[in-house]
Image (cartoon, rainbow, N blue to C red; front, side):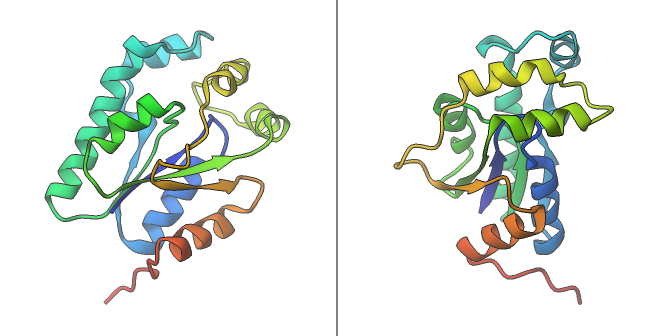
Length: 170
C-alpha cells in the first residue's frame, strides 16, 4: 500500500505522514523535496504553481511510489494533490495508492501558516490552494479526516481505517 497524505499547505500532512512512517516502518517521502528549485523560488515569491510546473513534480512523486511498490514496500508521502487530475497522476503509481485528505477550516490553517517559520510557502498563497482544492470524490480511493484533530489522533485513525498495526522492532 502507498498512502498520499494530502491537503493544503499547513494542514499537517508532513507531520501526519512522518508519524505514519514512524509507527509502521514504511518508507517516507516529503513531497516538497520533489519540487524543482525554480518552483520553490516561484512559490516563495508569492506566485502559485500552474499545471505546467506541477506536472514534473507529481510525476517524480508517482515515480517514487512506483519504485516502492515494485520493491514490495509500503510507503507514505506528503503531497498537496489538490485536484483529482493531480491525484490521478499519483494513482498511476499502482492500484494500492490511497489518499488521506486532511481537510478543515481556512481560518485554522491560515493561523498555522502565519505561525510557521522557515518554510518557502507564504501564507498569502493559501487562498489560491483552497480555490483549486477539489475534495475527494466518492469514487476516489481514500479517506477524508478533520485536520482539527491532533496529529496523533489522525495517525491512529489512518492506521485503524486501513487496518495496519504499528510497526514492532525486533
